[in-house]
Amino acid sequence: MSELPVVIIGAGPQGLAAAAHLTERGLDAIVVERGAGAGAAVSEWGHVRLFSAWPELTDAAARRLLEASGWTAPSGGYPTGAEWVDGYLTPLAKALGDRVLYGTTVTGVARQGRDKVVNSGRKAQPFVVHTINQDGSDGRILARAVIDASGTWAQPNPAGADGYPAVGETAASERISYRIPEDVSEFAGTHIVVVGAGHSATHAVLRLSELARREPGTRVTWLMRRGSATNVFGGGSGDELPERAALGSRARKVIDAGIVEVVTGFRVAEFAQDSGRLTLTAENGHEVTDVTHVFALTGFRPDTGILREVRVDLDGSLDAVAGIASEIDPNIHSCGSVGATGARQLTQPEQNLFIVGAKSYGRAPTFLALTGYEQVRSVVAHLAGDHEAAERNELVLPDTGVCGGAGGFDAEDGSCCAAPAVLQIGARPVTVS
Image (cartoon, rainbow, N blue to C red; front, side):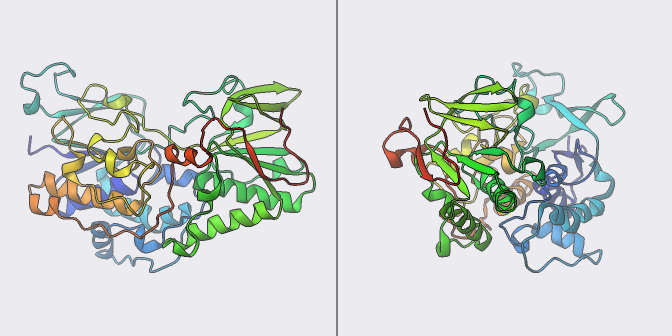
């Protein structure tokens, strides 16, 4: 077993950092990535600027590995996703060399010769990571341990407020996007709706508001499930992530200027199409009409299907690793108030299987790159037998205090079922019936 590698699923920030830590400790690592390059998921939102600065986006072991080859860490500024990939993730993957396998999709993780039910001899068997390789053939990789850093990007939440696609959402899929837009020029002169209250939704609203300024007749409506938009605007001067504070301030300005219409307490129940236009109906019957396109940016959820033949313990409400759920619940915590989560908290019933990064947070939106780097540092120390280092807390986060999720924010208007409130009306009113 000790001669087998640790297999890491995903060549994103946490997966590559885990490989760097394993390499530094002299342990064999294989990173399995379904995309064509490092940070493939990040590349899909490469046009978006992060609100974490460069020093908060690189891992210590990764920096040491890169600096040995002459790489210099960017000292400041806020990169876009594309700049993060080009300036850090791609060089890191190159430094790891043939340890990273691209175009390889993991279809399942199991114990060799044992399905989920079998107890006998289970811990003595290596893991088997089942794959579909670049040439379309099936593959198997034996592993002493598995670190699942596959993230949540491939699983966006639907617009439907109950966690399932709303009635008509699937049929209207050509007019619904689940990613932050880059080029929005095709929507000039039309009515566009954004659903969601997180940072992705805010980014989309700001991009669309620029179009509305330039192109007469362009309408932007922002639908939020929560009863108040207050927390969307961030912590202002109290936010130790200045770029995130600036994002919230810009959002407030476009609303105050009447460029964007905001409707709170709107929980999407149905999409109806008529003559190329959409009508969105809320759970309480209220409607927003004459919509050309919808950006549903309501968060992400983990795909746990590849882990169905191993024993995992996930929280029933967040789909997060059970051992950290109470520390990351967005009803209680912000990004900055979340404590360090390491190997002890991430331990699964299946020995030497770890879920890290955004996937470990499940549906909680409070994940930061620094938290993930601390996770993999601790997990790798544990796998190397350095239990003192695994228990040590090396995480220092900014005091953010504004990274709210869903749950408790509904209470601000006393009821999640209260009628929508239009905070600001632009050139034309939202049709409510």
